[in-house]
Image (cartoon, rainbow, N blue to C red):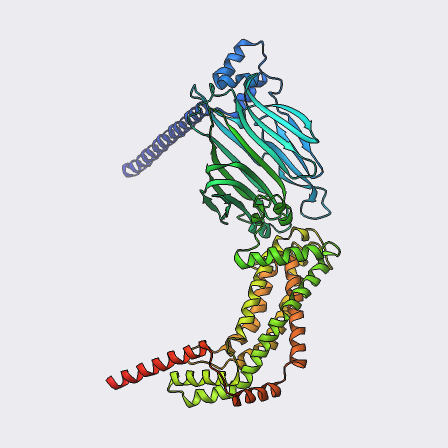
Length: 631
């Protein structure tokens, strides 16, 4: 009984100890939670005390009247000399509208910057939409100057109220937005909007603020913008959304694609926030000495991130001149149209990615004017077809030379193979005899490669031209509703990596066309080029490419604009047709063989290049003999 009693008492004792431990742990946890909450509250209070928020200033301004000396003193405590601007009737949430045939701009009293920019000639997503393209709305962008006063205040213009004055001068709308410290001392943003123009003048100047502002340092400014999605394919649109800038007297560059990219150029004269088919540009006649340009990709998941594409940030500074600011600048809110931007004569055509070097020249001097001419009197789909036909006809002499060279090499192949077998153990001799055969037959082994190389820049130029052609936007052809976007004929219930969640028809047709083209040409190319020792077998490579190229075409073009797919489909069809005509009517293997045999019988004068090659081979042969003797 005593043992049982002991056991029972022990159990009770352990239970009490367990309860006490729990109680202690609970109280400690509560103390910890309270301590964390207290620390969080103190931190929030401290942050609030340090930060002069827009809400505090706006509320103070709203509750203030000119006759209320207490509240004026409160404003002066926050704003210093600029408290005067908060006492004016304009110190309220209001907007002034500038509008012409192209654009509607709303400028906010608070901050003085453009709060809305809507393009009147462009619809969002598709041509049946009722929503116009708005580059700025719902606080997705702002422009701010950070003012440092002589009484050690730091004020942000985006938090302060400007006084608007709208007038008309020579048919132009002129809006003066003034942030005043007195009747005759102010910071002014001056906007001038001309009729039928996307570009507006934008001047920043100060008057009488040299006694208010600290003019020993430049005024920092920031221009931020989250770019709205405006096209059907957010991935395709995002691929062409980037910051383009001009610096150092006419040089241009861009901030790369990616999650977080940054450039810090000097002597910047314009900054463009490009959104594939639209762009927002800040231009200045007085270069910014240095600027920090940042780009952040907002599309991490295409199924969820469907509103914005990129976040762009610019920070730079405006320098004082004789104690005052005086900058002549411009804003552009409009389409990324090569011809339109080029007409401003401000190097803005570089914003359109038409390619560098020869690729850009082909686009600027051939593709753009030719396609622009055709599109003035025919539908865009027909214009693409006619454009493609004209380009292929112009390239047909080069195509002919390429096929002719392949035919000659094919005729010579048996003799080349015979030389290869005869001198299989002497590569140098084999090379000499092969070159001699080419010379006697009047055949240039490089003649087939050079024409193909000439065509490559035109092909690459088309890859740059069609995605940049805003003329194609929301223009339909056959089943394609928008030639600037993919021509979806079926929606998939799942997503295929690289390919996407839909089926586009023009890429399928282009893939079929390139398959038959390569099927018809690969045999001739493989036969015309005998295998070289130590080199890969081109016949095997071509067999792989017959199937690999169409698959790559299908995957690559499924999410691209259907205009580019249409161009490649028609281009391959025309090439097949030209090839069939050349083979049937212009290339006769028997005649080519007879001509080669006739060339062999004629004495040949050795060209400088051939003589040099022969001499180099002979020298190499002599060196090889000397080495063998030494051994």
